[in-house]
Every structure is written in structure tokens, then in C-alpha cells.
Length: 442
Image (tube, rainbow, N blue to C red; front, side, top):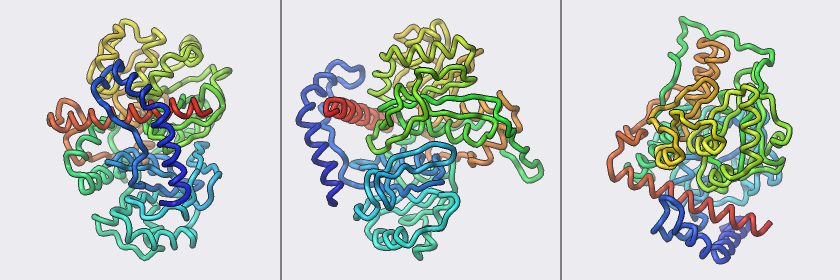
């Protein structure tokens, strides 16, 4: 294990010692977590994603939401230099904390598409050394260039090359089945509620895609907060950022960077919610413990209500509906959320419906995690017309073919449902301990 990884491990042990009893006490009262004495620690099997300027956010985050949640996985976003902020399409920036050279013998290597440059010699040298030590090298979109430069041939098993967008999610689930067994892969598909429903017919060669509107006419803001699930926000971000007419901002309670629920990804915030009003669309992602905290934050709730009062379209993804419920905007309405939180939504006096997304005049709620892509495409279609929505869907590309019939709770086998709940519970407890430890350590 490298020096940096050892440092992270020591931090995890400190967190576990100082906050273990607090975590178990909270588990005793938290809904759905009672009886689980799960002792959180950072995984020991590195799942590494190579990131750099121009990386396509969905091609980076999508596979990591699956492969980074394999048993005992430790998600790592890495580049040649640490301390750098890597910019994805648009103005999404992520912080790099571990140098590529300091990562050895990763379980999985993810090579996402990067726009505008060829593989660097240092990256190729590292990939050649590490490919033989890894159980999976997973190239997405333009990531095939890194395979070619390293002299690696995709075999569909240990070395996989796939298109971006939904194809990367599909292929990552197939890879997860090989690495952790089919039941576990099906449970991962259920955990992210990957039961896709593309809102538009795919663009074909005999129906050319329209030119996307370029003049900014729509302001959209995506809320980021500590402990959120990355794909809840990144799926919609990838959709909205492809429409030049949408002026997109990433908003936080403060300007401080946020860390997502796995603890592996740190994202920058464009501006705080203090003066962030007047948006045409705002989007609220979900998570686990982080979402519970955001739902108690009067500043965040006031921001949502202020935008709603100005006739913003308010969209929630996954358990983001639980934050929206605290504003009172969903009172007496039908709504959807992640299948694991339907009871919580019902207890708030809201009628839960198992649908991919539910439209109200100025409110839209979407189901779990991956539904954010579906709902964002639908919103683009509502704002600019179905031809533009279809064009963006084609650009992603988003023509999903899930490998298993387990994305909806009603279709999942009982043993898969049980395993999915365990994955979600482990994530929730880990997120709680991380957030509590980081807050206490300042």
C-alpha cells in the first residue's frame, strides 16, 4: 500500500475509534438501520478512475457508481498530479488527492473519455505496469485511446471497451457480475434503480439531429451537498450541460467543496445559495445521511422555497424528494423517490407512486439515482421541444440495455432485494461515519 493510501487508512481508523459508539447509537434509532452493527472502514481494493481536464462526467461517474461499490472497494479518482482541479465538460471540477504514480495494483482501472488530448507517456507507462495486476481494465468512450497506446487489446472480460453514456452503465454491471457474482450485480442495479425509461425515440440517420439552441435563455441550478450520491447530480448535469441555451450552475450551502457519499469524490461549487435565486430550473439530488442533514438545513429549505415562489421548476432525484418534502411543496401531492425511502415519504403525508418520474405543474420527482438522466432529458424536451430532447439523448448516447431485469423493486428476486438493502445500508452508515468524523476533525 502506498504512502497516501496508508494515510487515508490511518484517518479511517481514527474516525472509527472516535465515532464508532456514536455510529452504533445512531444505528439503533435510524429507520432501516436498526440491528446492523456494521463497522465502517475504507475498502482495501482500489477501484481507480483516471481523470483529467475534458473528461466526460457521466463516463467517469457512471461506472464508478457501480464498480466503486463492489465488495471492499476503495474508489479513487486520480491524475498525474495531486491538488489539481480537473474540469469536466462544462464547469464541473473535481479535486484530485492521490497521484497516479502512488496507486499500485488496483482491482479495477476505469479509463473514461477525455476530450481534446492524447494519452500522456506517464499514463501509458503506468497503465502498462498495472494492467497485468488488475482484474479489470474498463475503457469508456475515448478511453480506447489509452488501451491502444498501451498495446492492450479488449477481450470483453479482463479488458473491456465500451461506448459512453448508458452503454458504460450496462457494461459496468456485466463486469460487476464477473467480479462479484450475478446476485451482487443485480443488487447494484437495484440499488441505483437502473430501470431506464428514455423519454424520446432515438435519432436515426434519416432524421438528422437539430442544431441545439445556443443563446442562453434558461438558468438552471443543481444543488450539491456533502453526502449526496454523485450520479443523482451528474446524470442531469451531463444532460443540461449539452444544451448551450442552458446557463448551468452548481450550488452549495457555502462555496466550500463538497464530498459525495462514497468519500471518494470531491466537487467544487460554483456559488452559494445565499443569493442564488431566479432560476428557471433547480435540481435536488439525493443520498443517505447527507440527505437527512440537508433536509434539516433551514438555509437550504429556504432557498428551495424562494425559487419555487418565483415559479422555478423544482426537480428532485431519488431521495432528494425527502428534502423537497420538508419544504411543504409536496403536501397533498403524488410523488416518487428511491424505492428504499417510500415509507419515509408516505410518513410525511405524501402519496408515493412507483413511477420513473412524476410531473406536477412546477414540481417533478424522479425515482432512484439513474432516473435523474430520464427526468433531465424530459425537462429538456419540455423546455425546448422533443426534437432537442431527442438530440441530447442521442449525444449522450442514451440507449440503455440493462443486463438484468432487477432495476425495479417489483422485478427483483427476494435475495437480490435483501442484498441491495445491505449495500444501501452499508453506504448509509459509511457516509454517516465519514461526515461525522470530518465535521469533528474540522
